[in-house]
Length: 96
Length: 208
Image (cartoon, rainbow over all chains, first blue to last red; front, top):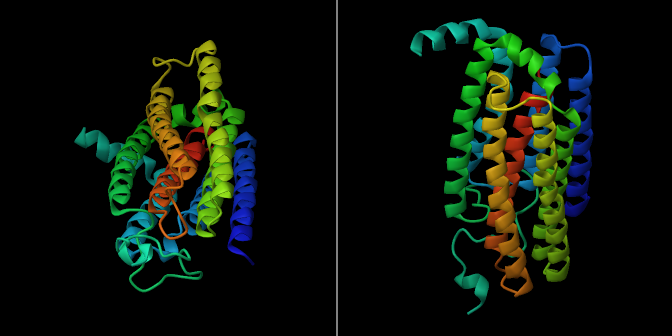
């Protein structure tokens, strides 16, 4: 498959994931499962952009590590905030 | 001496990055200076996201009800505009690697048109928000939302200005298949701005 074809498919996949993600927001269910699903969709979209558009796999190790930490850290924080929201509020409340 | 032989160590190779997985050592896509800027941008947004999560932990009910107040259609519109603009930029870089300057310019014009769609939608959304009483005094969720999204809008404006610059440089024939690090530097900035929006969108429009 040519590189440009991969870019086209990546764009199409991103559009599908975005519309699917938006439908999650419009739906009625909003439990922990939906939060995990939202975080997974976020992580997948970011991975596609990093891999195909930013070309991170060919970048230096330092750039790759820093960007992947940020990109994959966010979905993890989304889930952690959902699980440990009370603890975060207590700790930050004490600090603030 | 050929141009490629005198290029800086971080300049992209003539044929672009090799296909496949990680390469030993790797390369710096674009320029080192742009990556310094990108890491500053990422740090800035990481701090703002921290504010979001702390606020969310303190006001879970407010953030649970928050997305219902916003226009999901506008949020999806931003996402599609930015993703399509990013795709056009990626195609522009590939066109330049293939030494097709005119195709590169056409892709950049496409990227600009879709990129401008973002502030246009923002204009309509802000008017819609204000008409529905969603101003700076509408609570923690809306304040955090304006704080993050307006900051992102500023970065989009910088990107659009950068896009005009690389279009001008493409028209004047500054870039070639051998040296296009300026174009690639702009591309990595635009894609990073894209990534940040892909995080903002679910946090404010989807997650409850």
